[in-house]
Image (cartoon, rainbow, N blue to C red; front, side, top):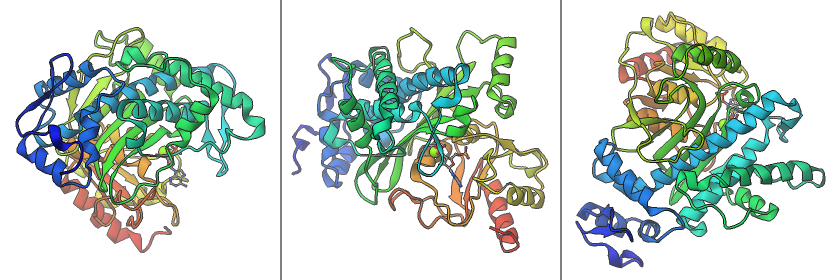
Length: 451
Ligand SMILES: Nc1ncnc2c1ncn2[C@@H]1O[C@H](COP(=O)(O)O)[C@@H](OP(=O)(O)O)[C@H]1O
Ligand SMILES: [Mg+2]
């Protein structure tokens, strides 16, 4: 018998120190733990982390009340709980940095070796989430594939930048108790922050459990004061088992998605927020196999996070007539061919203007029913990264939608950091009928395209 399984007995609840039921194993769970390769998962669940357990138990109860999960995905409740609260914290961090970018100077935007933009928010979110996951589950149990590394931060001339990152991480972690985490005993030092960022150096693969993190997806949108997302997913044996997307500027009304963020702010002022605080930003999430996806508003300043934090289920659109459907795509034509999608739209009879939005907010838009189709066709040779899709894929699927490559195959998260073998592009849609039409249209147009 694998270590740590001695506590497992079918049907017997594990009761936390405060007497609340944390986890009730069914015989299936015993089986899945005993016979999976992940003996650590038992330890993972039963170890007493440096983490407020009342949140763990309350998510289970609240999620059951909300009907989020049937029996099977129960095993990932704690991971989901931690992931949602960590992404909430990251949203708060990013909002502060974006506000300062907009109101102060643009010299806070830096270039990576590949010339793509990066800001202190990218490194700070990666450090903060890495630290929170390690504190919650134990450092050696946490493997993360993430976008940023410390190359630029470690250069001799980057001391100011590094100090700003350390400061931002500590500001964020100072808020940990509000989100149900125990913060660090004392402020993290430079080496702690660099270590937390570098810890995200997993390269994924077909077996085992690892997180994917895009700390600021759509950095271009972020620095332009527009849409961006924080994307965290958990992958086990190549399958995405949970996804969380923080969308701090996701507007209440879908029409506002295509406006510049400044315009959205003006609109928000014109239409005052309602009492349930959905006016700006949300976190959307799903557990694989639960048949439900959820969204909840960002936590208001000074409020304490309490599940379910006004969560509501989200569902894809029921529109299956292309003439009524909206498709969304990247803002930058360098990231996806606008001319190819315009041709597809024409072939399929899509009449509406495309909704062009930065980042994985597009996945949230499909899951919430604000648009029916998302298409991305990158230039030949570009390899999609797993952190740019994992969280969004499971959220759309659990909200009732479909995500495949252009050949109709599921995206394969088991091949390392890239979506290797991706056939031409990524397609997400609200349902099978629309999906089939897109795939047929791609087949009909591909050979005459320049892609
Ligand atoms: N040439 C390219 N082709 C396709 N995708 C690209 C690209 N260059 C960057 N990207 C990816 O597109 C993401 C932005 O998505 P979108 O274009 O939908 O806003 C980027 O995420 P980051 O901003 O996290 O680097 C990056 O991963
Ligand atoms: Mg990205």
